[in-house]
Amino acid sequence: MKRRSLQRGVRGLGVAAGVFAAMFATVTLARAAGRGSDSQHWLSAASAALNTDGTVHSFPLTQPRSGPTTLAIARDGRVWFTESAGNRIGRINPDGSGLMEWTLPHPDSAPRIIALGADGNMWFSEHLGNRMGRIAPDGTITEFDIHTPASQPRAIALGADGNIWFGMFAAGKIGRITPAGVITEFAIPTPNSGPRALAAGPDGAIWFSEYRTNRIGRITAQGKITEYSLPRPNSGPGDITAGADGAMWFVELSGGMDGVQTNGKRVGRITRRGVISEFAMPAQGPSPINIAVGPDRNIWYSRGSVLGRVTPRGQIKEFPLGKALAVGLSAGSDRQPPLHLVNRLWFTDARQNRISYLQFDSP
Image 1 (cartoon, rainbow, N blue to C red):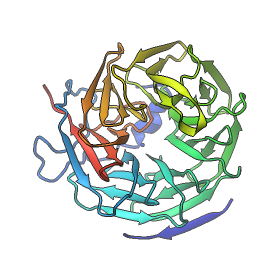
Image 2 (tube, rainbow, N blue to C red):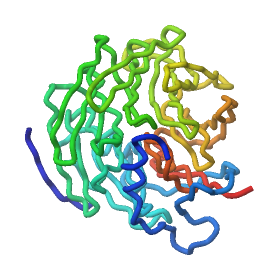
Image 3 (tube, rainbow, N blue to C red):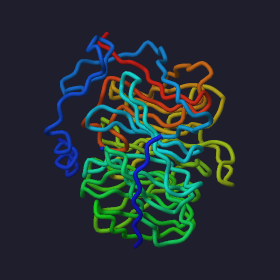
């Protein structure tokens, strides 16, 4: 294992609850400047039902064509994000101030997914760099080489064991990296499965999508893997997260991404026993991309210039975003059981080079 460090300026439900709750035990609720009704704050478990009027609030990035991709919310409420095209990691305060960007040590690393680790640092995948990265609050970057060459790491999530888990899309493996940087790889039984995304479940296991072979998989902390076939061929399972209802939710892609023709354009739900339900999206248009639990504890997804809301019964409503191209989105759970959420649904706008959010308030 090789390690490289560089500092440059310019994160109730099964086994998982103990680790995830402990991360926030000593955190003072972070609020944006002004502390008004429109400021950001962490929600309590007893928070009343929240709604959004769909108004988009945005903060532009200073460097052009950065390609903001995914984001995550730190304990202090600051928003961290990857810039795939700009080869940087960024951070911004909830009120839009304090924008910082750190260039990765290696060109063309294509940072993809970012998540809060149990160590309080932010972790991210380098899709083309074949590395896992870690950035400390002060901007210190440490990288860890993945053993399998050209594995194309994508989605990552903090597991109930305190380790970061990641999917290796080209290698057909699931990886695990400890806070100290020790990597273990687990081969998926079905060859050429294309693990596109993964998330920690309320059962303490990691759930993942197999994009190329039309399955949802589950891996325990000991590395035991179970696979569940989707009911329709070419569904293209993609991003996945744990819902507030205790099930796992995922999007089904549509089109020809990564050389696979898919006909999904649905939101899927899978129970701990592997029972699968699918809900069709209401209109024609681009493929869905990412999925997250919103401040209202419903499922939300990004799809071109809209964000979609999915109730536990599968009722879908989409909110237009104007000229935006929404990619990653988060209200704080970041592919984990939604134990900690803020009152905003943040999303990256790759077309307009912005970090944006929808505000949620009591009705």
